[in-house]
Length: 130
Length: 288
Image (cartoon, rainbow over all chains, first blue to last red):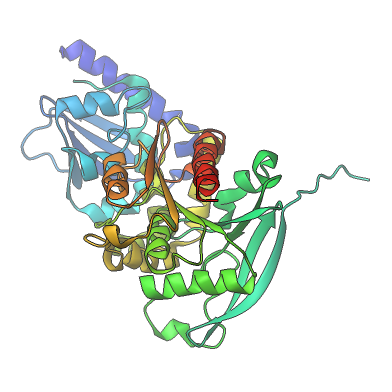
Protein backbone atom coordinates (compact mmCIF):
# COMPACT_ATOMS: atom_id res chain seq x y z
CA UNK A 1 0.00 0.00 0.00
CA UNK A 2 1.42 3.35 -1.03
CA UNK A 3 1.96 6.06 1.54
CA UNK A 4 -0.95 8.13 0.19
CA UNK A 5 -3.28 5.14 0.39
CA UNK A 6 -2.11 4.39 3.94
CA UNK A 7 -2.83 7.98 4.91
CA UNK A 8 -6.26 7.81 3.31
CA UNK A 9 -7.05 4.53 5.12
CA UNK A 10 -5.91 5.94 8.48
CA UNK A 11 -7.93 9.09 7.98
CA UNK A 12 -11.07 7.13 7.10
CA UNK A 13 -10.63 4.82 10.10
CA UNK A 14 -10.23 7.80 12.42
CA UNK A 15 -13.25 9.63 10.95
CA UNK A 16 -15.46 6.55 11.27
CA UNK A 17 -14.24 5.95 14.82
CA UNK A 18 -14.66 9.50 16.02
CA UNK A 19 -18.21 9.79 14.72
CA UNK A 20 -19.26 6.30 15.87
CA UNK A 21 -22.34 6.75 18.06
CA UNK A 22 -21.67 3.75 20.27
CA UNK A 23 -18.10 4.79 20.99
CA UNK A 24 -19.21 8.36 21.63
CA UNK A 25 -21.82 7.13 24.10
CA UNK A 26 -19.70 4.51 25.90
CA UNK A 27 -16.06 5.38 25.22
CA UNK A 28 -15.37 7.76 28.10
CA UNK A 29 -12.83 5.35 29.63
CA UNK A 30 -11.77 3.64 26.38
CA UNK A 31 -8.06 4.49 26.47
CA UNK A 32 -5.47 1.98 25.29
CA UNK A 33 -2.92 1.17 22.60
CA UNK A 34 -2.70 -1.98 20.53
CA UNK A 35 -1.05 -3.43 17.46
CA UNK A 36 -2.90 -4.96 14.54
CA UNK A 37 -0.40 -7.33 12.94
CA UNK A 38 -1.72 -8.11 9.46
CA UNK A 39 1.27 -10.13 8.22
CA UNK A 40 2.28 -7.71 5.48
CA UNK A 41 1.43 -4.57 7.45
CA UNK A 42 1.35 -3.54 11.09
CA UNK A 43 -0.92 -0.84 12.49
CA UNK A 44 -0.50 0.68 15.95
CA UNK A 45 -3.72 2.30 17.15
CA UNK A 46 -3.76 4.60 20.16
CA UNK A 47 -7.18 5.60 21.48
CA UNK A 48 -7.94 8.17 24.18
CA UNK A 49 -11.41 8.49 25.74
CA UNK A 50 -12.94 6.72 22.76
CA UNK A 51 -11.35 8.98 20.12
CA UNK A 52 -8.37 8.07 17.95
CA UNK A 53 -5.19 9.65 19.26
CA UNK A 54 -2.81 8.30 16.60
CA UNK A 55 -2.71 5.59 13.94
CA UNK A 56 0.86 4.54 13.25
CA UNK A 57 1.30 2.42 10.13
CA UNK A 58 4.35 0.16 10.34
CA UNK A 59 5.60 1.37 13.75
CA UNK A 60 9.24 1.17 14.74
CA UNK A 61 10.71 -1.61 16.89
CA UNK A 62 10.57 0.44 20.10
CA UNK A 63 7.06 1.86 19.66
CA UNK A 64 5.04 0.74 22.66
CA UNK A 65 1.63 -0.92 22.73
CA UNK A 66 -0.27 -2.84 25.40
CA UNK A 67 -1.52 -5.82 23.42
CA UNK A 68 -1.35 -7.20 19.91
CA UNK A 69 -3.86 -8.94 17.63
CA UNK A 70 -1.98 -10.95 15.03
CA UNK A 71 -3.35 -12.86 12.04
CA UNK A 72 -2.59 -13.53 8.39
CA UNK A 73 -3.45 -10.93 5.75
CA UNK A 74 -6.09 -13.35 4.42
CA UNK A 75 -7.81 -13.52 7.83
CA UNK A 76 -7.87 -9.72 8.14
CA UNK A 77 -9.27 -9.33 4.61
CA UNK A 78 -12.16 -11.66 5.50
CA UNK A 79 -12.55 -10.05 8.94
CA UNK A 80 -12.97 -6.66 7.22
CA UNK A 81 -15.63 -7.74 4.71
CA UNK A 82 -19.00 -5.97 5.17
CA UNK A 83 -20.46 -9.35 6.17
CA UNK A 84 -17.53 -11.50 7.25
CA UNK A 85 -17.78 -15.24 6.66
CA UNK A 86 -18.15 -17.65 9.61
CA UNK A 87 -15.09 -17.90 11.85
CA UNK A 88 -13.75 -14.55 10.62
CA UNK A 89 -16.47 -12.45 12.24
CA UNK A 90 -14.65 -11.37 15.40
CA UNK A 91 -11.46 -11.73 17.40
CA UNK A 92 -12.91 -14.55 19.53
CA UNK A 93 -14.13 -16.52 16.52
CA UNK A 94 -10.89 -16.06 14.58
CA UNK A 95 -8.79 -16.93 17.65
CA UNK A 96 -10.73 -20.07 18.54
CA UNK A 97 -11.04 -21.36 14.97
CA UNK A 98 -8.47 -19.53 12.86
CA UNK A 99 -4.90 -18.25 12.87
CA UNK A 100 -5.51 -15.14 15.00
CA UNK A 101 -3.40 -14.72 18.13
CA UNK A 102 -4.08 -12.40 21.07
CA UNK A 103 -0.86 -11.40 22.78
CA UNK A 104 0.45 -8.97 25.39
CA UNK A 105 -1.52 -7.56 28.30
CA UNK A 106 -4.85 -9.28 27.73
CA UNK A 107 -6.26 -7.71 30.89
CA UNK A 108 -6.23 -4.36 29.05
CA UNK A 109 -7.98 -6.03 26.12
CA UNK A 110 -10.66 -7.43 28.44
CA UNK A 111 -11.08 -4.13 30.28
CA UNK A 112 -11.83 -2.45 26.95
CA UNK A 113 -13.58 -5.36 25.26
CA UNK A 114 -16.91 -3.67 24.56
CA UNK A 115 -15.44 -0.60 22.87
CA UNK A 116 -12.58 -2.52 21.26
CA UNK A 117 -15.13 -4.81 19.59
CA UNK A 118 -16.99 -1.80 18.23
CA UNK A 119 -13.76 -0.18 17.07
CA UNK A 120 -12.59 -3.29 15.21
CA UNK A 121 -15.94 -3.54 13.44
CA UNK A 122 -15.05 -0.23 11.77
CA UNK A 123 -12.85 -2.41 9.54
CA UNK A 124 -16.11 -3.68 8.01
CA UNK A 125 -16.75 -0.10 6.85
CA UNK A 126 -13.27 1.01 5.76
CA UNK A 127 -11.84 -2.38 4.74
CA UNK A 128 -8.46 -3.90 5.61
CA UNK A 129 -5.27 -2.08 4.60
CA UNK A 130 -3.76 -5.33 3.29
CA UNK B 1 -56.90 5.42 28.77
CA UNK B 2 -53.34 4.87 27.51
CA UNK B 3 -52.89 2.36 24.73
CA UNK B 4 -51.75 -1.02 26.08
CA UNK B 5 -51.01 -4.36 24.51
CA UNK B 6 -50.96 -7.48 26.66
CA UNK B 7 -48.86 -10.50 25.74
CA UNK B 8 -50.42 -13.96 25.92
CA UNK B 9 -47.27 -15.12 27.73
CA UNK B 10 -47.70 -15.64 31.46
CA UNK B 11 -45.11 -16.01 34.20
CA UNK B 12 -45.32 -18.08 37.35
CA UNK B 13 -43.16 -19.42 40.17
CA UNK B 14 -43.02 -23.03 41.32
CA UNK B 15 -41.00 -24.17 44.33
CA UNK B 16 -39.30 -27.54 43.98
CA UNK B 17 -36.74 -29.57 45.93
CA UNK B 18 -33.66 -31.04 44.26
CA UNK B 19 -31.15 -33.01 46.34
CA UNK B 20 -32.45 -31.34 49.51
CA UNK B 21 -32.10 -27.82 48.11
CA UNK B 22 -35.18 -25.67 47.73
CA UNK B 23 -35.59 -23.67 44.53
CA UNK B 24 -38.26 -21.14 43.64
CA UNK B 25 -38.25 -21.43 39.87
CA UNK B 26 -39.65 -18.82 37.52
CA UNK B 27 -41.02 -19.86 34.16
CA UNK B 28 -42.81 -18.25 31.24
CA UNK B 29 -45.33 -20.13 29.15
CA UNK B 30 -47.81 -19.83 26.32
CA UNK B 31 -49.76 -22.21 24.11
CA UNK B 32 -51.35 -25.61 24.43
CA UNK B 33 -50.49 -29.09 23.23
CA UNK B 34 -47.34 -31.13 23.59
CA UNK B 35 -44.94 -29.33 25.98
CA UNK B 36 -41.69 -27.93 24.64
CA UNK B 37 -39.43 -27.21 27.62
CA UNK B 38 -36.86 -24.54 26.73
CA UNK B 39 -33.49 -23.97 28.42
CA UNK B 40 -31.61 -20.68 27.96
CA UNK B 41 -27.85 -20.49 27.43
CA UNK B 42 -25.17 -20.17 30.14
CA UNK B 43 -25.21 -16.90 32.09
CA UNK B 44 -28.51 -15.87 30.55
CA UNK B 45 -32.26 -16.19 31.18
CA UNK B 46 -35.53 -17.19 29.61
CA UNK B 47 -36.09 -14.00 27.58
CA UNK B 48 -33.90 -15.60 24.96
CA UNK B 49 -37.05 -17.53 24.00
CA UNK B 50 -39.20 -14.38 23.69
CA UNK B 51 -39.81 -14.90 19.97
CA UNK B 52 -40.92 -18.51 20.25
CA UNK B 53 -43.13 -17.78 23.27
CA UNK B 54 -45.21 -15.38 21.18
CA UNK B 55 -45.09 -17.26 17.89
CA UNK B 56 -48.68 -18.39 17.24
CA UNK B 57 -47.72 -20.94 14.63
CA UNK B 58 -45.98 -22.88 17.38
CA UNK B 59 -48.14 -22.03 20.39
CA UNK B 60 -51.33 -23.23 18.68
CA UNK B 61 -49.89 -26.77 18.70
CA UNK B 62 -47.37 -26.72 21.52
CA UNK B 63 -47.22 -25.55 25.13
CA UNK B 64 -43.97 -23.59 25.15
CA UNK B 65 -42.37 -23.36 28.60
CA UNK B 66 -39.17 -21.37 29.17
CA UNK B 67 -37.77 -21.44 32.70
CA UNK B 68 -34.92 -19.67 34.43
CA UNK B 69 -32.36 -22.10 35.81
CA UNK B 70 -31.59 -21.32 39.51
CA UNK B 71 -29.17 -18.35 39.81
CA UNK B 72 -30.46 -16.92 36.52
CA UNK B 73 -33.13 -14.33 35.74
CA UNK B 74 -35.88 -14.53 38.35
CA UNK B 75 -34.91 -17.96 39.76
CA UNK B 76 -32.89 -17.33 42.90
CA UNK B 77 -30.08 -19.51 44.26
CA UNK B 78 -31.27 -22.21 46.73
CA UNK B 79 -33.53 -20.73 49.39
CA UNK B 80 -32.34 -22.99 52.22
CA UNK B 81 -28.57 -22.87 51.65
CA UNK B 82 -25.79 -20.39 52.42
CA UNK B 83 -24.88 -20.55 48.74
CA UNK B 84 -22.59 -17.52 48.96
CA UNK B 85 -20.08 -19.60 50.94
CA UNK B 86 -19.43 -21.97 48.03
CA UNK B 87 -18.11 -21.56 44.52
CA UNK B 88 -20.86 -22.25 42.00
CA UNK B 89 -20.01 -25.11 39.64
CA UNK B 90 -22.87 -26.64 37.70
CA UNK B 91 -22.67 -30.42 37.26
CA UNK B 92 -24.40 -32.70 34.77
CA UNK B 93 -25.87 -34.73 37.61
CA UNK B 94 -27.58 -31.78 39.31
CA UNK B 95 -28.59 -30.13 36.04
CA UNK B 96 -30.42 -33.21 34.71
CA UNK B 97 -32.05 -33.93 38.08
CA UNK B 98 -33.28 -30.34 38.26
CA UNK B 99 -34.87 -30.48 34.81
CA UNK B 100 -36.59 -33.82 35.44
CA UNK B 101 -37.86 -32.60 38.85
CA UNK B 102 -39.24 -29.45 37.23
CA UNK B 103 -40.98 -31.45 34.49
CA UNK B 104 -42.46 -33.73 37.17
CA UNK B 105 -43.64 -30.75 39.24
CA UNK B 106 -45.39 -29.28 36.18
CA UNK B 107 -46.85 -32.76 35.45
CA UNK B 108 -45.62 -32.60 31.87
CA UNK B 109 -46.48 -35.61 29.74
CA UNK B 110 -44.26 -36.57 26.85
CA UNK B 111 -42.35 -33.28 26.71
CA UNK B 112 -39.84 -32.26 24.09
CA UNK B 113 -36.75 -30.72 25.68
CA UNK B 114 -34.90 -28.02 23.77
CA UNK B 115 -31.87 -26.07 24.94
CA UNK B 116 -29.08 -24.07 23.38
CA UNK B 117 -25.34 -24.20 24.14
CA UNK B 118 -25.07 -25.56 27.70
CA UNK B 119 -28.80 -26.24 27.31
CA UNK B 120 -28.05 -28.23 24.17
CA UNK B 121 -25.38 -30.22 25.95
CA UNK B 122 -27.76 -31.06 28.79
CA UNK B 123 -30.33 -32.15 26.20
CA UNK B 124 -27.82 -34.84 25.17
CA UNK B 125 -27.34 -35.78 28.84
CA UNK B 126 -31.12 -36.09 29.29
CA UNK B 127 -31.40 -38.29 26.22
CA UNK B 128 -28.69 -40.56 27.66
CA UNK B 129 -29.81 -40.78 31.29
CA UNK B 130 -33.60 -40.11 31.14
CA UNK B 131 -34.82 -41.60 27.83
CA UNK B 132 -38.18 -42.56 29.35
CA UNK B 133 -39.01 -39.05 30.56
CA UNK B 134 -38.83 -37.20 27.21
CA UNK B 135 -40.45 -37.75 23.85
CA UNK B 136 -37.57 -36.06 22.06
CA UNK B 137 -34.74 -33.60 22.56
CA UNK B 138 -33.55 -30.78 20.35
CA UNK B 139 -29.95 -29.99 21.26
CA UNK B 140 -29.17 -26.59 19.74
CA UNK B 141 -25.50 -25.59 19.35
CA UNK B 142 -24.46 -28.75 21.21
CA UNK B 143 -21.70 -31.33 21.03
CA UNK B 144 -20.43 -34.39 22.85
CA UNK B 145 -17.60 -32.25 24.24
CA UNK B 146 -17.09 -28.47 24.24
CA UNK B 147 -13.86 -27.53 26.01
CA UNK B 148 -12.17 -24.15 26.24
CA UNK B 149 -14.71 -21.72 27.67
CA UNK B 150 -14.25 -22.22 31.43
CA UNK B 151 -12.18 -19.05 31.74
CA UNK B 152 -11.16 -16.82 34.65
CA UNK B 153 -11.81 -13.74 32.50
CA UNK B 154 -15.55 -14.05 33.17
CA UNK B 155 -14.97 -13.07 36.81
CA UNK B 156 -11.70 -11.14 36.78
CA UNK B 157 -11.98 -8.41 39.45
CA UNK B 158 -9.90 -5.93 37.43
CA UNK B 159 -12.26 -5.99 34.46
CA UNK B 160 -15.96 -5.16 34.10
CA UNK B 161 -17.37 -8.69 34.31
CA UNK B 162 -20.75 -7.68 32.90
CA UNK B 163 -19.15 -6.25 29.76
CA UNK B 164 -16.56 -9.02 29.41
CA UNK B 165 -19.31 -11.66 29.47
CA UNK B 166 -21.64 -9.74 27.17
CA UNK B 167 -18.99 -8.70 24.64
CA UNK B 168 -17.12 -12.00 25.04
CA UNK B 169 -20.09 -13.81 23.53
CA UNK B 170 -20.79 -11.13 20.89
CA UNK B 171 -18.83 -13.04 18.24
CA UNK B 172 -20.94 -16.11 18.91
CA UNK B 173 -23.72 -14.36 16.99
CA UNK B 174 -23.86 -13.94 13.23
CA UNK B 175 -23.07 -10.35 12.20
CA UNK B 176 -26.10 -10.27 9.91
CA UNK B 177 -28.55 -11.12 12.72
CA UNK B 178 -30.73 -8.07 13.48
CA UNK B 179 -29.01 -5.41 15.61
CA UNK B 180 -31.92 -5.10 18.02
CA UNK B 181 -31.89 -8.82 18.76
CA UNK B 182 -28.12 -9.07 19.07
CA UNK B 183 -28.13 -6.13 21.46
CA UNK B 184 -31.01 -7.61 23.48
CA UNK B 185 -28.92 -10.77 23.83
CA UNK B 186 -25.87 -8.68 24.79
CA UNK B 187 -28.02 -6.92 27.39
CA UNK B 188 -29.18 -10.22 28.91
CA UNK B 189 -25.56 -11.31 29.15
CA UNK B 190 -24.59 -8.16 31.00
CA UNK B 191 -27.01 -9.31 33.75
CA UNK B 192 -25.72 -12.83 34.30
CA UNK B 193 -21.97 -12.63 34.74
CA UNK B 194 -21.90 -14.07 38.26
CA UNK B 195 -23.39 -17.41 37.16
CA UNK B 196 -21.70 -17.56 33.76
CA UNK B 197 -18.42 -19.12 34.84
CA UNK B 198 -20.11 -21.73 37.05
CA UNK B 199 -22.40 -22.66 34.16
CA UNK B 200 -19.37 -23.08 31.94
CA UNK B 201 -17.92 -25.60 34.38
CA UNK B 202 -20.67 -27.88 33.12
CA UNK B 203 -20.32 -26.75 29.52
CA UNK B 204 -16.56 -27.13 29.15
CA UNK B 205 -15.49 -29.46 31.97
CA UNK B 206 -18.15 -31.76 33.43
CA UNK B 207 -20.00 -32.41 30.18
CA UNK B 208 -18.11 -35.02 28.23
CA UNK B 209 -20.07 -37.67 26.35
CA UNK B 210 -17.22 -38.81 24.14
CA UNK B 211 -17.44 -42.57 23.86
CA UNK B 212 -20.96 -42.66 25.31
CA UNK B 213 -23.12 -41.38 22.44
CA UNK B 214 -23.84 -44.89 21.17
CA UNK B 215 -25.56 -45.58 24.52
CA UNK B 216 -28.26 -42.99 23.79
CA UNK B 217 -31.47 -44.85 22.95
CA UNK B 218 -32.33 -42.84 19.88
CA UNK B 219 -35.16 -45.19 19.03
CA UNK B 220 -36.84 -44.24 22.32
CA UNK B 221 -35.99 -40.55 22.51
CA UNK B 222 -35.64 -38.83 19.14
CA UNK B 223 -32.62 -36.53 18.88
CA UNK B 224 -32.63 -33.70 16.33
CA UNK B 225 -29.58 -31.43 16.54
CA UNK B 226 -29.41 -27.87 15.16
CA UNK B 227 -26.19 -25.86 14.77
CA UNK B 228 -25.57 -22.45 13.22
CA UNK B 229 -22.64 -21.92 10.89
CA UNK B 230 -21.43 -18.82 12.79
CA UNK B 231 -20.98 -20.79 16.03
CA UNK B 232 -17.24 -20.91 16.73
CA UNK B 233 -17.60 -22.92 19.96
CA UNK B 234 -19.63 -25.86 18.72
CA UNK B 235 -19.26 -25.77 14.97
CA UNK B 236 -21.50 -27.55 12.47
CA UNK B 237 -18.73 -30.15 12.19
CA UNK B 238 -19.00 -30.78 15.95
CA UNK B 239 -22.78 -31.15 15.73
CA UNK B 240 -22.60 -33.41 12.69
CA UNK B 241 -19.97 -35.61 14.35
CA UNK B 242 -22.06 -35.88 17.53
CA UNK B 243 -25.33 -36.70 15.76
CA UNK B 244 -23.64 -39.31 13.58
CA UNK B 245 -22.83 -41.38 16.69
CA UNK B 246 -26.40 -41.36 18.11
CA UNK B 247 -28.87 -43.94 16.89
CA UNK B 248 -31.58 -42.41 14.64
CA UNK B 249 -30.35 -38.87 15.33
CA UNK B 250 -30.64 -36.14 12.73
CA UNK B 251 -28.51 -33.05 12.22
CA UNK B 252 -29.54 -29.80 10.59
CA UNK B 253 -27.01 -27.07 9.80
CA UNK B 254 -28.50 -23.60 10.15
CA UNK B 255 -27.05 -21.09 7.69
CA UNK B 256 -26.47 -17.45 8.59
CA UNK B 257 -26.97 -17.75 12.33
CA UNK B 258 -24.86 -18.28 15.44
CA UNK B 259 -24.79 -19.74 18.94
CA UNK B 260 -27.95 -18.01 20.28
CA UNK B 261 -30.29 -18.62 17.33
CA UNK B 262 -33.61 -18.28 19.19
CA UNK B 263 -32.51 -14.97 20.65
CA UNK B 264 -30.36 -13.41 17.91
CA UNK B 265 -32.71 -14.17 15.01
CA UNK B 266 -35.97 -15.98 15.83
CA UNK B 267 -37.39 -15.27 12.36
CA UNK B 268 -34.65 -17.36 10.79
CA UNK B 269 -34.43 -19.93 13.60
CA UNK B 270 -38.17 -20.70 13.46
CA UNK B 271 -37.79 -22.25 9.99
CA UNK B 272 -35.21 -24.74 11.23
CA UNK B 273 -37.22 -25.43 14.38
CA UNK B 274 -40.29 -26.24 12.27
CA UNK B 275 -38.17 -28.70 10.33
CA UNK B 276 -36.96 -30.32 13.58
CA UNK B 277 -40.49 -30.61 14.98
CA UNK B 278 -41.74 -32.10 11.71
CA UNK B 279 -39.02 -34.76 11.94
CA UNK B 280 -40.10 -35.56 15.52
CA UNK B 281 -43.79 -35.76 14.50
CA UNK B 282 -42.96 -38.05 11.59
CA UNK B 283 -40.88 -40.30 13.87
CA UNK B 284 -43.76 -40.53 16.34
CA UNK B 285 -46.23 -41.39 13.55
CA UNK B 286 -43.91 -44.11 12.31
CA UNK B 287 -43.67 -45.51 15.86
CA UNK B 288 -47.47 -45.49 16.36
